[in-house]
Length: 238
Image 1 (cartoon, rainbow, N blue to C red):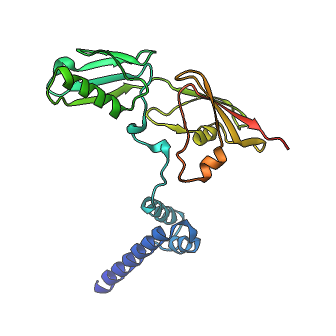
Image 2: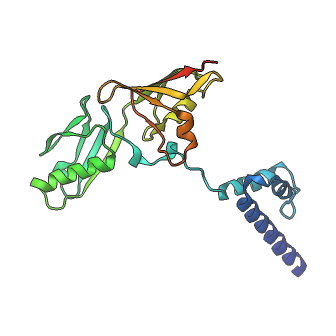
Image 3: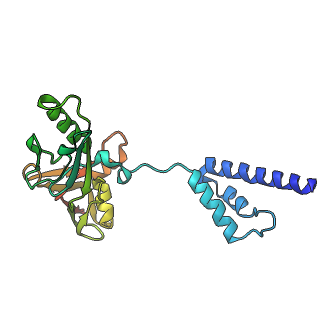
């Protein structure tokens, strides 16, 4: 009995130590992963099931790469046809469901038409709070929730794998590189140094972006695609 107990403790300690070493070492040490795959719990043979369990544990311990595709709602910009619920603490009469119109405005009690389009939820909340505090309430507590997201689309054309129209994830932003990735990525003929973006919001204009340089410089903020943008990837000349 004591011998079995000591074996179990030593065995589990060895597994825990190897798991920690593998997680800290990352995927650059395949030999460690191979060693782990040969370890089985007492009474169980080593095999695919044991290997999968150990690999999943190691992946869970590894850091998750950051990406703007996983940003929270602070990065989201309100747009036409979004439906909002605005609540003011202890002011039930001011709790309102409203839809943002095409011109970016919405009508709120006491305040009338307010401009919400293009603002983040945090910015919109601060604006409503400040307007209410200015003339109507003392220290109002305002919360804004998007209850229905408008369909937001962008178009990618030219030298990409799958040209077409794509939708934004509900509350997330999309960088130019991610938009191109959603469209199948660059073809081998793509001219990555001059990708043009035609933007209709705030008046028609064309923006030229060097995607390669933008990607290679970690200090440069990634170019964000906006609803109704058209991305055009040109062809290289040889």
